[in-house]
Length: 274
Ligand SMILES: [Zn+2]
Image 1 (tube, rainbow, N blue to C red):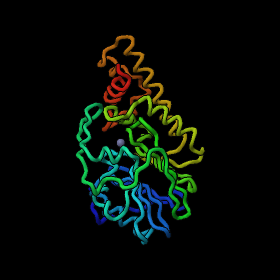
Image 2: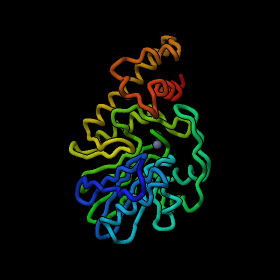
Image 3: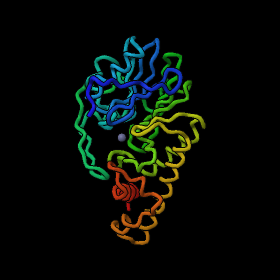
Image 4: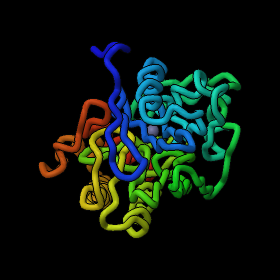
């Protein structure tokens, strides 16, 4: 059990870029003399701890909060922080936060609509670059993958990138196939990301430990091989239950509390219309 008194120590990754591993997800941070840029807040209860951690590094004014996408465990700080600093995100984050987001495939949840203070004030469609603390921060949209509002936050000087939920190291991903996401799109986006990033980049995923290109490539192989296998079984008229039971042993360790092997099979079949 974590209490607010226990501070969240920022971990230096490179240059002015830090990781704050908050409860429920990874907060990225660029902190220096120009102020601080935060990336994602997984839950409202973590805002105070994150804020204390940020202030220990950058006592200057807060500058920007960036959302990697519209899911509740990435925008949970928006309502508390929206009056203190502008929120930047893809255009679809603003649209999604204005209404309830209902999810029934893979997981079952409703992400309630957020109040206007939580809506991003600066939105973009394809790309936007920020220059602070001597860092070039490139925000790049990857369409129709994990969701319809995914952006990566690439601190290109420090060679660190926060990729939100595009990448789940060693885990089957959740894909929001009912709200503009796609398993095939995610696979293609990960391939693009592998081409784009330098071999030595440090990669912050939305959840789990910091990874690298080797981890991203292993994840891409899993996406390709498991989706091919699942679709092939379905074309051979195997029942969903049969497919779930027969997933090759190599991939079973990729199942986890949030997305089990059975949930991954369900997501893939739904996404490919099978
Ligand atoms: Zn997500």
